[in-house]
Length: 229
Image (cartoon, rainbow, N blue to C red; front, side):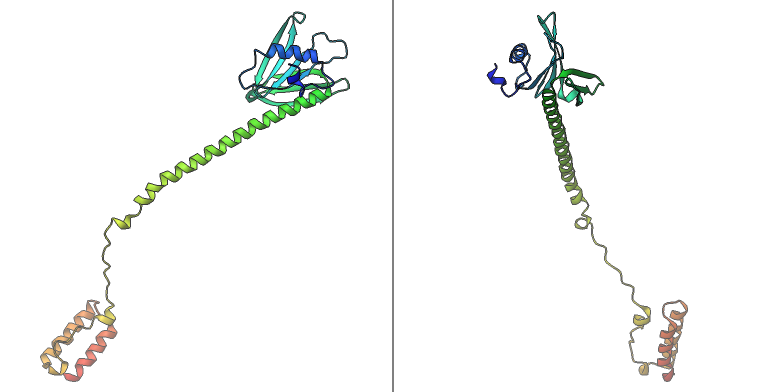
């Protein structure tokens, strides 16, 4: 057991105390759960049964000896429930405090400063990891939503192409009466009788009065007829 905890132990920790704690935790650890660090309380006076705090990759575990060390009380909090943590250093040691999202606050005092710092570092790493996982999930979810929107837009683009299914109405071009209103002559003016010329002039006057030809067009047609009257 001690060999597996070399990365946790330092000069401020009692190997026997660490071994005792890990032995009691052995049956409490979940699958794929690993101990990251253990900090043991060290008060100025002799502490026979110190409190300790254990951090794993899944949770924070508070260990409090009871009944003169014959039993141990455990309180654990998943990292998802931890809102934050901080360390306050004093002359005789440091306090490690963490708060939960339900506004609970827990403090383990009189920890050796070196242990408290490593405890805080590990806790910060776990909280940052959870934050990054949450951000990655949010980005992935957003990307999936965008992908769904793109898929749903495809049939809309096909349906709105009405030019493929609607007939095109022929464009009716209204001729410029000033240019094209002149009626074709069945006969040349010189071949018409005066009665026919006079009748034609009357027809042009009716077109002018009805607004079908302009005054300038009427004057041009009249000037063409008058020499033959």
